[in-house]
Length: 247
Image (tube, rainbow, N blue to C red; front, side):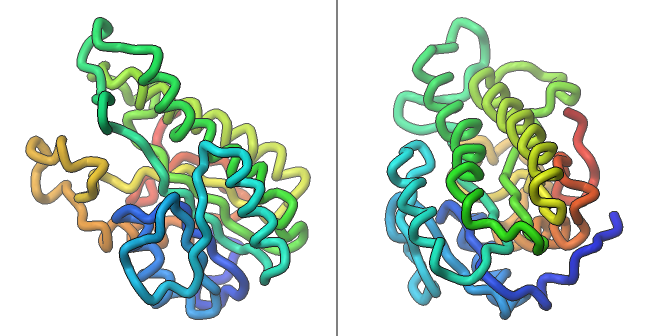
């Protein structure tokens, strides 16, 4: 993947990391090392546990008012050059991945789609007014290999699979629109691999240790992939090792 963009070490402006889970916090730490010219902004529903952040803005991607507040908060700052959305929902109280059709519930579909599908594209909508029109920027959102329709050979996990597949379609469509309006934009969907975070914790026992990444390693892989992407790759679905994932 040849990139038309300079390396992250040369970037100037604002970087927004949405979500303060394991991968989100690891990305902030990695960006502080690899992109010293970027002002880092973290967003989450609650203040993140790590002290020393340059800036934190409260955000709930399922709340329109919260998204509007974020747009206003960023309007007066430096140009927004990098957005990485790490927010995702796989399990929680009264929510577990379905093993068979009988376990599927309307409420699970609605909750999963609200976070995993609607959240990323509504985030893009909220930020569109503060994006640079003639400068390069990256808009990336974490997807998942299980959201690939072509790669689905196991079934199950109806809500999560469908919501991630919907996110892929929504951001692919966004990339086509932004290609006309923001010619230097790159929209990407990233699969970080199975990472030792709270999201994957209930399912880690069956994952070989060689295939379970630390959050720091996953963050490094994701930034490596982003550094290899430019506007010509906008709208792609990429694995942690830079390989394309089938839709």
